[in-house]
Image 1: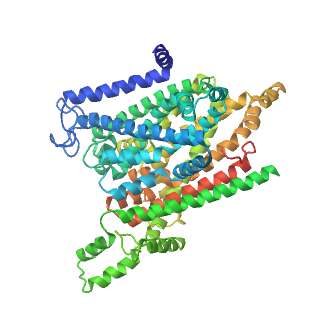
Image 2: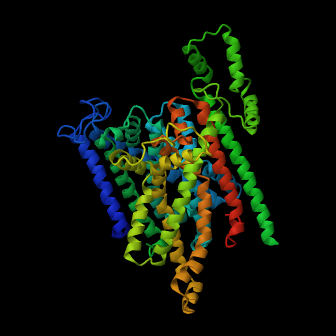
Length: 283
Length: 339
């Protein structure tokens, strides 16, 4: 426990992490408290269309008479949910593949490495487009699964090479000499060494998931039944909101998303500096 | 000798991997749409009937169309025919613009995408590299640090968001630039006419600007960190000790050494050229692959979507293969050993 406390204090000593964390907490609180207080359903027509911001509709309404404020609050939650799910799949599945390939080596390693190489070279956006187009009705959960399918290869490769180098260290030979079994060595000696790296990667992967999800949705392949930040931009473009001076409709999702990106990126960078002390001196 | 032998093995390994990947990509591209609900022939026939034609011999028509869309025979037979057709450059027919061929649509869109992304990438690379060189050389200055933070932020902003802001400011509020399109509607598409090129450049300015600004940060950061690393190297210190002029050390010694990795990164990014502009084109209704993809998705034109994804997959896969094979030749510090 003492150890964990010290670790957390060290993380918050990083100014970048703290700044990102504050923005992140603010966004989450804003979204949770906001949707508790203002309960418009994001997909329902609740007022006249194209209304500029006022007391009743804080961010105005869109061309369908839906409340933009509620859409933003809802969108933040959905984006984060997708990001957390995708990142969990990528980080845990990818790392597991990396550990197994790196630690057991041999034929297992060759087979897994070929799969990883193949996954890394398949261009992401066209592949996702092809899959979502074929599925037709995309739900948010399915979107997360598809993103997860394409995101695990990168962490797998990195964990594999880290495991390969950890395997040759002295403390592993010590453990072997003292009679630890292979799986004991893997779980007690090697995996804990990678936990910090995995948490830094977790944040980076969340950023990647939010970005990719938004790009796919802006192309028109998002879920039709819920309102995410990417789907808001899709409708903004479809309904030419910019040329009709409906500024409240298009500026709000952009600003929200940039805040989200920046906060995740800053947290990732802060953690990354702690994990790789080599980066610390660099600016 | 040993090095050459290793190079040989590495090259074979890469080639086999490349072939496997391309086959998988082709297979996925072939399979997925066949599992999708609905069929293209029904759509085409319904479309033609809506235009007022009646079919007397409907079964014959369906038969003909099945052959045209490559849907005749068992799945393995279809796959073999698909491969042989693709090797001849035949990607089938568009469903929406039937009987226009997919390759015709792609051929019309591709030059615009390559032009937009090629020019934007070149500008952004050159600008980012020069600014990053100075920023890396004076890495302790306040200006350099501020620039780095701006570049970091730009790096996470998706280019299409900036495109929306630019279109609002420069096309809507100030009305200096057109809302979209690639050339004035009064002109005919003709890549040799001066009028057309002028109009093309004018219309391409905003989409290009949005790509340049958002990718600038990447080139800036990459060369800056290269230069910061190089500054501590012995040969730079030696040049300083010899009393050479600072600008000479920067250009002749530091920049020269950073140029190769920076160029390699450029080559790597060229594979993604087609990939990178999809959403920008859509926002500016710029008639490249991105807009074609967007329209095809909206109208469920599967054959065209398939063609576009195939082109992007092949170009990215091929570029990665070339770079992988050439990289160790260009930079002797990298060996052909297996990672």
